[in-house]
Amino acid sequence: MSIDRGIPLAERMRPRSIDELAGQGHLLGTGRALAESVRAGRPHSMILWGPPGSGKTTLARLVADHAEARFLTLSAVTSGVKEIRAAMAEAEQVRAADGRTVLFVDEVHRFNKAQQDAFLPYVEDGTVIFVGATTENPSFELNKALLSRARVYMLRALDDAALDALLERALQDPERGLGGRRLEVTVSGRSLLLRAADGDARRLLAALEIAADLAVEGVLNESVVGEAVAGGSTRRFDKGGDDFYDQISALHKSIRGSDPDGALYWLARMLDGGCDPLYLGRRLIRVASEDIGNADPRALQIALDGVAAYERLGSPEGELALAQVVAYQASVPKSNRVYTAWQAAENDCRSHGSLEVPMHLRNAPTGVMKSQGFGAGYRYAHDEPEAYAAGVQYLPDALAGRRYYEPSDRGLEERIRQRFLRLRARDE
Image 1 (cartoon, rainbow, N blue to C red):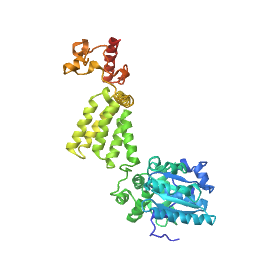
Image 2 (image 1 turned 90 degrees about the horizontal axis):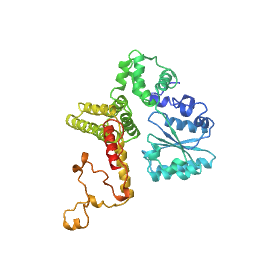
Image 3 (image 1 turned 180 degrees about the vertical axis):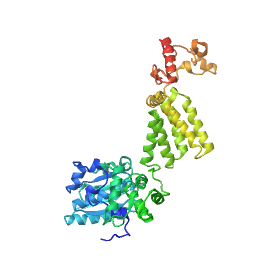
Image 4 (image 1 turned 135 degrees about the horizontal axis):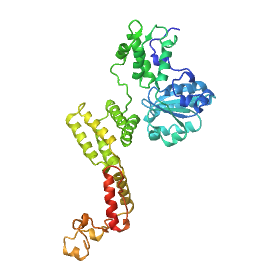
């Protein structure tokens, strides 16, 4: 069969069975519930959550094929209420003829809540087997009512082994792939193709197709592949999307975990993906107080200085200052005691109402106020030993004895903790 060059390679190579689908062994391996239900032709409504090129559309098609069901598609990018009603009317006609319909909704997270609700009765009564695809976290983007009627499956970016198998199949398949052309991929060319794909099957096949047209004497070496993938970013990063929040979480947690290598990597990934460096700088200032605190108070000043340096230098020179901040923060002792103390104080403010200031802490600038007892019994701390008035209560009466800030035994806070132990012994 001759190859229709008008159809992109990625579309020609779309798997025709579960066994051809690259990767996703955690969902489609032997004995897995999803794989068994698809093979048996017993589909159920589902949400497929995963990065681009992980096989969401293909899996939806296979669900319909194995169930011998009508396959209808809607894209939330281009569809509205009119298209939804038309699709539901078509599905009802199929059902009336004792058929089944798999309704595939791409980018389902782009439908608003009301539009998502429009599917519920048809999913509920079995008119359609609903398969939604999304790159965003369904927990945040989809109605709870829709989620309760569909199982969520998380697809993963393809690893190198899955990509390599797909690459080899495209090279060898005489019917759909490039098997009709004598092509040789060098080790370096293959490595670059896999790296450029970044877990995305569609991206891999698109790059391979371009490289094949550029091949010199049928050889796809690093130079040819490099020309094919030139100008395209190979790292996943979606400003405001799941990748963004996953990566900022990884950066923060690497610093918290005292791993400068991990922290520097995630900083580089985010800057490489186009994240606003000043956003990262603001996060690092927050980290200095939340995760380091008084274990090393210098961390806050270093974060402020790093952001100021970036503002003065810009990119790329100023990015080194942010890297210095990250490396320092990940290397020093950690304490979240200021953070937890602040949360506790805020909670008491909210839950105890407007508690009165104790009389001995109030100012008494007038005679009338003094006669009412304002400031009576106040002890000036600087006149006391160690500038500490032992036994004085500074909290409202309802909160007397409450402890918010309990210094850790790390860094400077260990010295602060020892001082508190000594002063509180005097209180007793």
